[in-house]
Picture 1 (cartoon, rainbow, N blue to C red):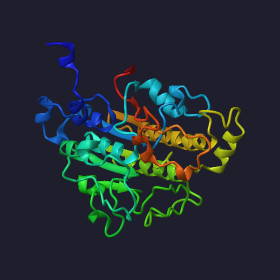
Picture 2: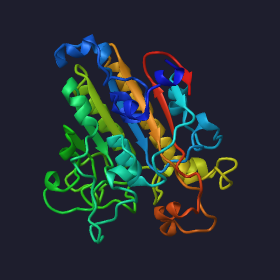
Picture 3: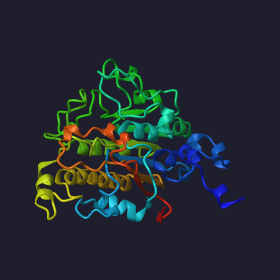
Length: 345
């Protein structure tokens, strides 16, 4: 048997519970003596809690742990420092919806049927991710997991009728809880309450910022399910355009040395700090709620294309990336923290 034979294939990694979420090499879907036990009787060591935080349209070089000196991401940097960095990881596509579909299913975009970003309800295509394709819940729920999704879904082009009846909605794939997922098309961004794309979401704090709200909902989910294994996908709308940040943070970065130069965009930096605060809150909540002996926190980021100089935000269509304007745009990176110490890949 060669060393190559011992390495997990892409398929086996993605079919593993943690790996299926974000490339975390914990092959929970493998067979062992423990697998023969009833799901709720297995040791907690076999079923760590799994949290995947996705940051929409983030470039690989926009966090401190990958060399950015303008953006401040201490919580993400700590997660990378104390966990595992996957320095050769790649997103499945340079676009939003195909990458999202690949993350949920473990399949390449060509096999999900989603190869471009999905449009609003006026689109002629009426595309959606087919529930016939197995997704993360089909792997984890038989093992006793509670499976939750908070935030952006963007895997359907239908935005009318009962949410659970819409083609490609997350409940159709087996998610137990779906919170703050868009009921109306979200392509242009909407970061301050009241959120036009989230009718029916219980009212939060005055002038609430969406990234903060997702962090609050993640906190509540973790505390609700602290005594059982769970999988939670915190799917941020940030830092997708149109960019919008909290005024206090925006002023901070506008006055920071280097603002406006390459890699130093104040609005993006302010939005990313809010995401970083969210990651810090999630990690703190995990520590406070640690009744079960193991928790895993993972972070997956997808690629933001380099901004063409002088081009207005409304003109920055994602579809251009498939036409070769920005080569290499599919690069993505993953950081993971959990039992087992630190190792770079």
